[in-house]
Length: 194
Image (cartoon, rainbow, N blue to C red; front, side, top):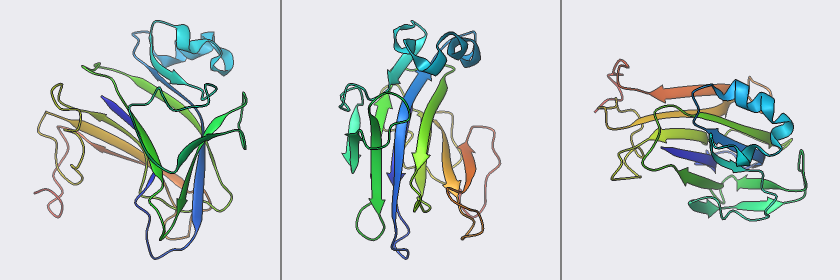
């Protein structure tokens, strides 16, 4: 399983800067559900010590060492935290860079997980193609769920993503949340499925 957080793949026709501040990330694998766990840890204080928590990063360590793969313009900063002293800021300048991202793998995986994160969008934020993505991959290949856009899964991977959507300027910033999922029983899109 993979969690990928970030900004990326800008529409090069626009020339604006976008940034997102990630204020904390929690990934949980537990039978009781994430609701009962989060109720025990107001503001996530101490949640990283619970045995049901696979991963938690509130960025107070002032680094990204908990993440397995970090690329681009992702930095720990104290400029806009929600709680605590630090957060992560990912800046994307359209036409100049593709933002940044951080990936975390949980190998060999889990049947059910809950992911929670907190994000703040800059006032000048504009659409980016990828924001948050959760994938299930083969145990022997952590990259196997990547690069499958438009394909119906064959049972060896799963992916779901979330991104703000502006509807070509009709939705106010940061946009509506758009969720898309590729799963085994989905119907094929004849234009996309290869």
